[in-house]
Amino acid sequence: MSKIQEIAELVEKGKAKLVGKAVQEAIDEGCEPTAILNEGMIDAMAVVGERFKNNEIFVPEMLVAARAMKKGVEVLKPYLATGATGALGKLIIATVAGDLHDIGKNLVAMMIESAGFEVIDLGVDVPIEKIVECYKENPDTKIIALSALLTTTMPSLRDTVAALNGEDFRSDIKVMVGGAPITREFAEEIGADGYSEDAASAATLAKELVSA
Image (tube, rainbow, N blue to C red; front, side):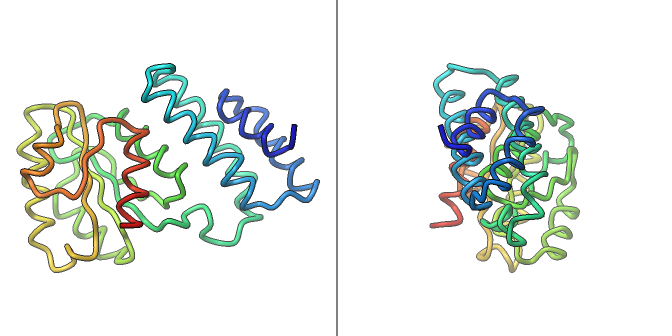
């Protein structure tokens, strides 16, 4: 088995303690850093995402795999051409004003980061102004991802998307939404560009939106 396959297996199994060492060994043996990132880690997380979608694994296993990948990336970062880990561009993620849930958002952020984005996480209960301000500080942002986990904060999500839709920079970005009470219909109705029902599909959706 190649070193890269070994890394992929360690990520899939969430062996955070072993991943860093395996990555370092792969580099020492002359493996291409981008191949370690793409085939060893990003592909492994895609497999994990698929398993999650098919209910073969659950949130804890997915978090453990994402953590293992993070450990691998820490070792790999100095060897990668700057920006390779965020090769797909910047993405701003936030839970909307009035909503304090962050587990789902954190998982989505980890999966999207694992897919190759540079993620700017604004946290929970984020007012519209803060999102707009963050975009203006990072005008090269490609996607704004918004989460609402309560039916009572759905109006807040609606208002946030409406505010973004009114901004001059709206044509330069894609807006994606998600969260337990959100449906594809609601996402379309409020004018978002995309909706995903879980963290794994959020990563796939983000990739689709930037390549569209």
